Amino acid sequence: MFSWLNGPGRVFREPLQGSTNYLGAYDRSGNLMRLRAGAEEENDQEDKVDVSKLNEEEKAKYNQEKEAKAAAKANELPRERQSDLRPYPLNNDFRSQSVLSEELREEIYKKIVDEKVDLSTVSALYGVDMRRVAAVVRLKTIERNWVSEGKKLATPYHDAVLAMLPQTRFNRKLLEDPKKTISHESINDLPVHPYTRTQIFYPTSESRQFTRADAAKVFSPTLLPADERIPLSELIDIEKDAINNLPREERTARIRERTEKKMRAKEEKERKQREWEARNVKIVSNQRWNFRFESISVEDAGKDGRSSRGVGWRYGNPHHDREKGEIKLPTRVE
Image 1 (cartoon, one colour):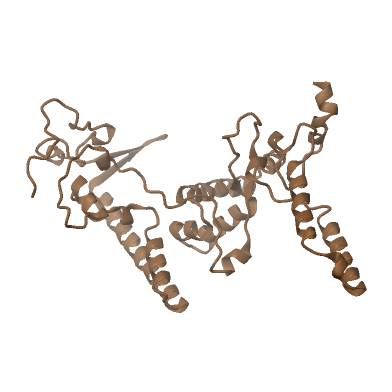
Image 2 (tube, rainbow, N blue to C red):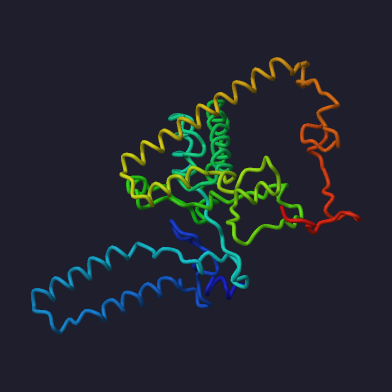
């Protein structure tokens, strides 16, 4: 242990500033491998310049630029590669995932709380999943409440842990360039709907085009197609406008119009929900709890008792596709 601490492990006594410091980033001698890779790339670039063909003035300028680059990179580490994000050198399949930097979290909180931008727009703007955006807003709200109440925060622990992890940093220049975007994670993954878990054999003609909308209707008449069930369906419309080479001003106006329409529909839905709860939900409060009583009807479960409006439906409703006697193969083509 002591031979390792005095040998390759000596580099871990003082952690790297602004970078992760994982075992997988070093060789057995304790050398940072990406420094060596960066030096090899510089040598390859230098070999492309034939100094012998330069005159005295060009040689002096070349040497001056070379010294300036060397001085600039003396205190600058190369960007981390995937191989540098392995905390466990013997596990080549595990990579440490990036977390949101403190600056990016502050920016997300300001957009939601101060500027009143909706979750989906912020998610698309910064490339962060909507659930993570909501979590950031909740945690930042708690943090500010603690500060106002005079509670002490574990800031040194927070900074130390954050320095050990790769971060997705906030860059305002990326927002100003329409060709570049901030991408922290995949934000438009399609969730698996329970209706799509059933086993269905559906015959269709080979001469017709079977679309995603047709597939959704096969699973359920009320199921939306995949293009409408993804978290940010408006990104498809934005991409279509870009493919059709619409002017930037028109694309921006369409985005604003769709966003306002979505916000109005959301407010209308919330208003109707509040009115319905005021008519049908009775709240009884005591010192610790609020009990909510809602009127129900046995007819809500439907004729077969399997309606989603029935009481207890959310706790499990098994499918019949594996039961004996169920005919799954099609017997006719409509």
